[in-house]
Length: 456
Image (cartoon, rainbow, N blue to C red; front, side, top):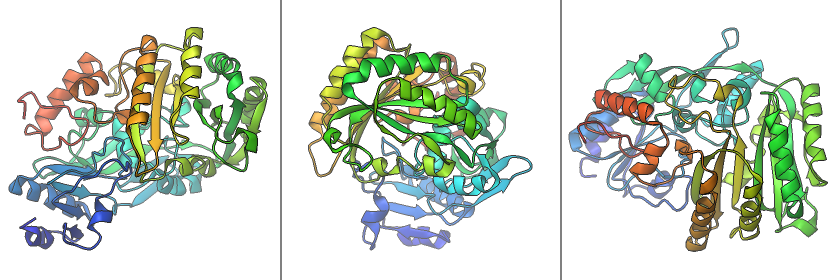
């Protein structure tokens, strides 16, 4: 960046250029297949830096990428030849235990927010690992261990400060707040999130239980029937993968296809213990890690499977249900899975997340009972082709069970038609109107982009 000195003069934080030590580390994001080279990285130290970086990028006509936690499958937290506005140093958080409210800056990871809220026995509904960024998860919706009892992360966003494309700081009005609840980073840079928090833990019943692949049909049917009658407090993810070489699994199943259920009961521990006991009846488990445990421990239990720097390719789809005709598809693709690091999940929805009125937020497809998430993952360097092919084939094989649409936070770089599929038509058109109002030049376009009506 020939004018890097000018940008440094405007920022209190660090400006990292291609010739600087640490540039290669600073430009990396979670998905190791993303290898982009920005012209500069503005590591903001405060809101004034965010404002200055946006204004500078506009003046210099530079593409803008915004990075929060960087945990994004499409790699939209970086770019080639543009300016990365890096928010990772903005980690302030405040909790009002009496008002059950938490304020969080956009550089926070979920475990960092949990550390503060759990001190008061509270939690904001987050994702399934502690390393996910608060900003991206919130703006795209936010499924996780608490979406059934308390709604999606976006449903619990009650206020936001936003830097707009013209370099102003605004408090989100009702229309903008609606768009931030599921419309992604299309409308500005959120510099402060205000969340509703809920009583959770600090101890609850949660964990993992593993079954042999031979019992897939029994387990999947049992999971389906159990969750059809489950209370809101119980959230379960059905996970199909090869067994890791973990000490809690018998050596004879290491590397073999297995079926697992990750479960969390957000109510009293004794109620949760009783509810999770039903999972042991689905089939003989090969490993049972269901137990009372600290919510923070459970929230980080899967972190080791989702560390940065690996190849990743995902596909997702909302599903109408889990009919028996799906069982052979699940068994075939579990058997043929191409990497010991990959998995595919059937996530039960419903509960509080499904009771939000249509159109109340920008998150659509709330009537779908399940979402499929296919997570291909492999060590680098390595050939992506077999893993990408397996993922696409599985996604196509599951399309007959589609409820229509996809979830924006699970989208890779799949083009405008797939972005549009994340929303119903009325929601999409309202998002376009909001984009036209707040970002008519499409400055914030390195994302799951919703373009303005002007076509900017």
